[in-house]
Picture 1 (cartoon, rainbow, N blue to C red):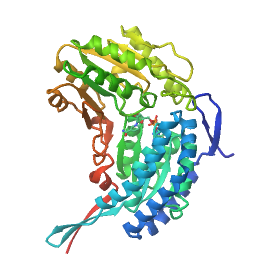
Picture 2 (cartoon, rainbow, N blue to C red; picture 1 turned 90 degrees about the vertical axis):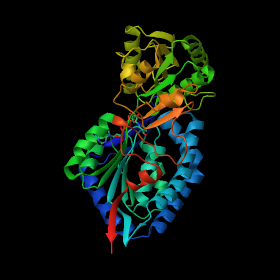
Picture 3 (cartoon, rainbow, N blue to C red; picture 1 turned 180 degrees about the vertical axis):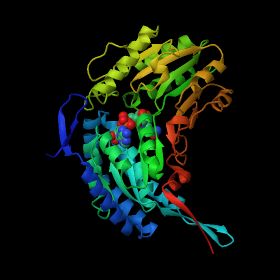
Picture 4 (tube, rainbow, N blue to C red; picture 1 turned 135 degrees about the vertical axis):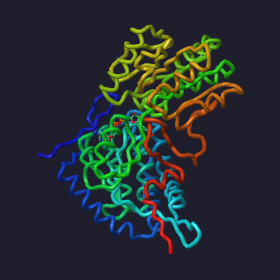
Length: 446
Ligand code: NAD
């Protein structure tokens, strides 16, 4: 009997829809179809491919509003954020196609030698639920531009929005150039182990490690954007109100379910009291609720397991001496009310790993060296932020992270790659260097 993947509204548990899960045999068929389509797709000029990709993304544009509602229902984020994500996926897809083409052009190295980027073959794109379209688009577009065909496995939490998106793109793209396979980690593993050439993955560190192991037999190419445990350092001469506003916004964005959300804050003890006061004041203004309720800016937590994990981190902090300034471990079902915990210590779960919830976790430091050491004492290294005066840049330069913001969030210029250091990433995307990972470098001398 056909196995179905059910998708639920995280705000109330209501069934939104069901889609068939691919069996192992079906995965094999999909990959064979992708291989056949690859023979034709790679033969098109890059200009022709980019033209089709841009047209495909423009098919999504008239459907931004309906896709945003579906995203909100399935994932829980409020409508303003969903509309922003779907809109930026459309515009971002088009501009990404152009910048990938520029990056992947053949280069003349002089002396009769040229360097070009050959397609790799079939690329599996595996994505998470927290930004269900944006994350997929970032990997899918450069893969297609480079001449690969793509098999996309969205998160089991957000299959409906992914299916609707792919159906729209496929009104333009040639048959089997972009296919979708539904399921959970089991289908992910089957795809990684199948006859494919590259796995482009965004998700957790644990799944990334498993993928690397399974892909090693055939040395399949990998790009992996993994989790983070981003620190923020607030120095004695920081603009306290600005730092507090950022700390709250970054810890609560997308209900804290964001790879670059601020997870740990180290504040100079000289300014800790006013900083905490501002944080509590800003945090108290946040409102939890379903996506269609007025003034909501913290939606439901994606599922019961993640909800349990956040509560576990909060209980652990409370048991180990954390001071609850707002919220705490007593929480309603499905939601986490804005929470602020102070006196975080190194033995707490929230210092050691991703809490992935709307929690501001604060610790005081006496000397800046201590703050830098604790910030760097992590296997993660995705983002980091420093708020402070003239020494802030030199502190930022001591942090072990792929993306660092000084008196601002991470990322900066749109031309920058999205990159994690240490165990937050293996490969990266965006920027010419990122795009070029989707092609095989070939040197031809004549
Ligand atoms: P997850 O790793 O549980 O799942 C991600 C995807 O991988 C899903 O489609 C899932 O079905 C699949 N999967 C799970 N195990 C697999 C395996 N062994 N082999 C192949 N596929 C497998 O992550 P999640 O809970 O969906 O997403 C949250 C995580 O993603 C967080 O750690 C977050 O920080 C990270 N994330 C990172 C970035 C980034 O840019 N670095 C962006 C968004 C999310």
